[in-house]
Amino acid sequence: MNVQVDFKGEKEVSIADGQTLLEASLAAGIPHCHACGGKGQCTTCRVLVLNGAEQLSEVNSCERLVREVRKLPDNVRLACQTNVRGEGVQVHRLIKDDIDRFIFINGIKEDPSEAIGKRRKMALFFIDIRNFTPFMEANLPFDVIHIMRRIITLFRNAIEHYGGKIIDTAGDGVYAVFGLDTNIKMATESAVFAGIKILEDVKIFNNTYMRAYFNHFFEVGIGLHVGQVIYGNVGIGLNNSLSVMGFPVNVAARLQAATKELNNSFVISEAAYGMLRNPPFSVRTAKINLKGVSNAFEVMLIGKPYQNAAAATVKAD
Image (cartoon, rainbow, N blue to C red):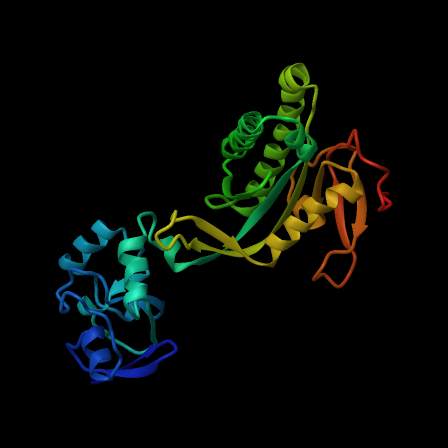
């Protein structure tokens, strides 16, 4: 008795008893990669199982060995070793050409599940250094790079201490996420703790180092938002970097930028603030207009006013 399997975005394929996913897809004219000839050695025939995993054959010893070596996630199967026992199966070919083959086989050296991409609720954390341009213009290149490394290290230590991960650095700013391994409430609280620690650590660094050696001080602006994003590894042979994408990321970045007009060093969205079990005291609120958001966006100001900032242009309650 034949059953139908949906190869997402390609066609439905009829599979006979005893036929593997690979054999059936090739017979149906799908150019399914199988560099080893379907012997369960190369993994180029791998498919992502979207539906009907319970209708697939058990993982055999050959597939189990390769899966362990390649660290393949449970929802990825080798088409050459997998039979179908019933209806309702939907799969997605992961390697469609030589470029895909390089990305998945040669280019990815970290967790292969990150190459597939996942959706997850995370806390998105942006931080930027204030007063850095005047310092850069007045000091030697060595001092500029050295101080930048000191500050970024300070950021990294606080972020990683509370379970966050730095995704990107650009100029004098850092983008980090919390929640890769925890639920969204814990992630949000951790991000707030990290931000508060950074504010305190920057203050100490100013008082014990910057003022003494450079007669200068730095301030920072932090923006925090929460939301569902897509994350995965897009390194493509460069640095195998994790990328986290989605509109909530844009919102968090814009909240960080809004710290200037709000004259407050730590701006957190109302959605993120609502996740906190023990929110900070003496919080002020404000409403701002953000690009891409139709209504006024409510935020909480949990930092401090800037020492060098002009009066805030947005009225806070």
